Amino acid sequence: MKTLDAQPFAYSFDPATTALIVIDMQRDFVEPHGFGEALGNDVSLLRRAIDPCRRLLEAARHAGLFVVHTREGHRPDLSNCPAAKLTRGGKTFIGQQGTMGRILIQGEPGHDIIPELYPQAGEPIIDKPGKGAFFATDLHLILQARGITSLIICGVTTEVCVQTTAREANDRGYEVLIPEDCCASYFPEFHRAALEMIKAQGAIVGWVSDADAVIDALR
Ligand code: TIU
Image (cartoon, rainbow, N blue to C red; front, side, top):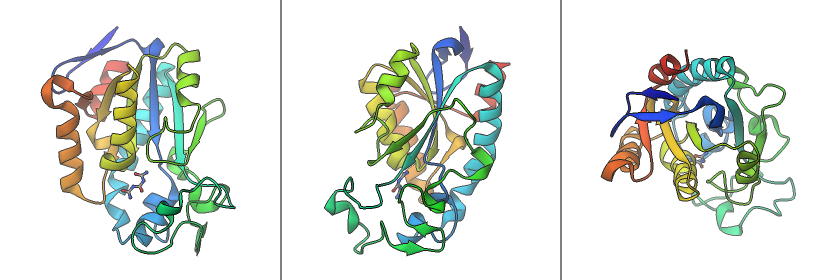
């Protein structure tokens, strides 16, 4: 077992039963001309999570942790996109042509994971139609098949797909840790508030730490 300093109290995990989940580090969210920018956001705010994620991903791979990546997106015919989601932001964005291909559509350049954090062979990629990584995916089945009980969750955005996934995981019995510098939001105040909510009430959803604490524990 490894133990690291975390809030609201120390987090213990066994690397053999722990997975690192990297949520939606896709070009459509962190590069210009994708979904994030179409919604009116400043994507540069998300880029600060890239380097901590890269360092943690490297340490996790070195320590033999199971690594899983997710991508938010939809089929080209939009058949798995709820009608309501098409007009979020007050306009239709998903499926429209951008400079990185059709926005949030599977197989398009913008839907892919950024090169800095690109998955390696053997690391599952979960394509998800919702914000949470467990909804309408085989993530739980994949984790159960590997005997995974603890999840270290990184990615974007903190209060949307990371928090939704953390809550889904917590309800399924996983022990969730979020390294705060490995996630980011277009709204820094939402990032802070989401992390407060997660660790409140004695880790009601999970624990919060940072990349260096996890990397040190994995050494
Ligand atoms: N808009 C926003 O903050 N996030 C999303 O739409 N998806 C994810 O968080 N991945």
